[in-house]
Every structure is written in C-alpha cells, then in structure tokens.
Image (tube, rainbow, N blue to C red; front, side, top):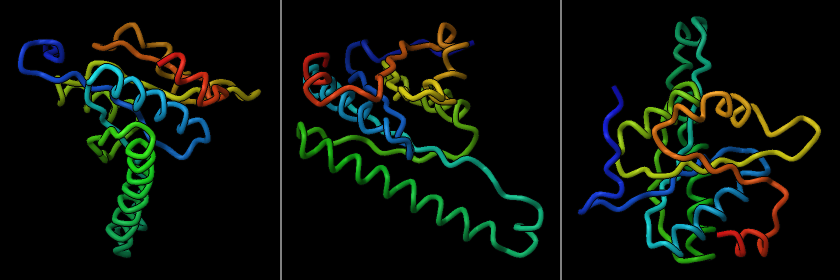
Length: 165
C-alpha cells in the first residue's frame, strides 16, 4: 500500500520533481518546474536516471564499475547544467538526485522515498515520433500515480512557459 503523501502537511515543503535527460525537450520541463517552484515557494527536485546496461562480459572484464562511474558523472553533469540554468533564471536551487534502474521504476521509487514530492513534471516531444517513450509509457498508468503528473510540450517558448507557470 502506498505511503500517504505528506507534501502538504504542516512542516513539509512540497517539491516539484522534474526528470532531467538528454532529450531536447527536457529544458522546457526544467524551466517550467523552476518557474512554478519559484512562484509557489515550493522546492525543486531534479532526477536523472542511469539505466542498467551491464552485460556478463563487461562484469567479467571489470569494465562495469568504470562504466557505472562514467554514467554517474554524465548524469551529474546534466543535473549540474540544469541546476545552473534554474539558478540563473529564477534563483531556485534544486535538490539533485541520481538513481539507477529502469526509468519508470526509478521515478516511482523516488516518489515513494520522498513524501514531499508533490508533482511530477515531464517533457513531451512534439515531433512525428510522438511525445517520447517515457511520456507514452507513463500515460497508460498516470492515473495510478500517487501524485499529479504535468506534461510540458517541448515546443513552448520561454514566454509561453512564463505565462503558464
């Protein structure tokens, strides 16, 4: 049974959680989340997920640890760049989290582990390929998430986002 959300209870600070990845639309979700956090006084959590890709051969040759460290460094660099952008844009300093695992599972685990996460913000592609695999996969189960999910289209301008946020 999911734990009761505590984000809006006394003594807690609700957080917007945005997933940071390499997609071109990610910046739009980061900007939206930062502007919302700034305007509401809520916290901002940025999550990067390293998906497992280690095969048996890599483990045998001792490459797995090196690859894992490189993946963590790359994820941290993405988070640092997004955090710098939010600091310059609206002065919001986010909490940065790197998790390992399947993306959807890692997102749910972070929501479960942090009762202050109040809203999940995702970026959606606007090209002919659709909104992207994460949004597509989560859309089927979004109603079962313990928090609201906001999807930010990747074609929005900074002015559009400022008006919406």
